[in-house]
Image (cartoon, rainbow, N blue to C red; front, side):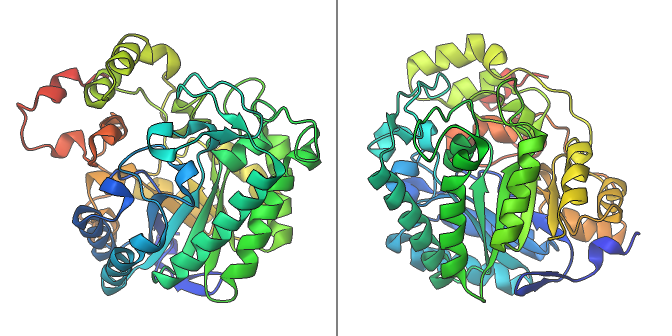
Length: 400
């Protein structure tokens, strides 16, 4: 089993040099919604560090899908620097993927201009009060996803990862918690999956034979009243029938169960330090642990549920969630998952994969403090253990 990680493997039209993929963890390196040199340098380092494919996160397909002022917006103006980015990744020996999505009720109107969602329900975690989408909105967003794939191909990406999990827009349609519609897009599971089917079918049509299509989906939303594993199995079957090339198996809901996604404890005072609005600083600092309840971290924490998907479909599956050791990676691949996605270990050390290959290390030095997530408002991506300036004022707020 030790050789599984470093065996080339097919992913739709691609052959990756090994079975590792850099997960689409938010980098926050796109001021003005455009690619920065820092983003290029990071993914270049990950490619040179041995990864099979690296995924650029979270590219909004339209302005209405934005939630940060330093988040990538996949539009014509972004293409030149995206080409520079993909060229650097390819030169490093890796394939290049880009995650595309729309954040729906998580949009911040200061950057998105509007906030839309399936049912217009208030979102405390924004906080936002979105407008319920009409049929024309739905048609426009489907077209936005199509255009995003065109632009991804023009930019030199080998693959797109469609974000259909974590409580973003597609996930909001799938979940009974956020979808209270009374038309053909709401109600029973068949109706709630209709928007996803329209989006993915459009993407498969435009991707053609040259671009691999992955879909990130939830195993569970992570709270009572959200989507559970039985419906997730049906989602996987639908996506297999549509013909996507792989599923990325995740879980959690940003607006209800954020720590179900990454586990551990959120250093809320660090997060509050970087927030701009004073009322948000106060709210997160004093009530953040109630809103982002800690979840225990164990390696491969989604594996039990992911096995149920493996039993139900035959298309390639990408396991994500707590991959920090050679032993853990080998175990997951040995159970029939074609790829593993890794995020925090590659923020801590972009050369993680090469160091496993050479035997320099077998376990990541990441301590799961989630500092890298807490600083997402700062416009940078950083590991607490790698911060050279130990006198930096925000470090005193690190908890856990």
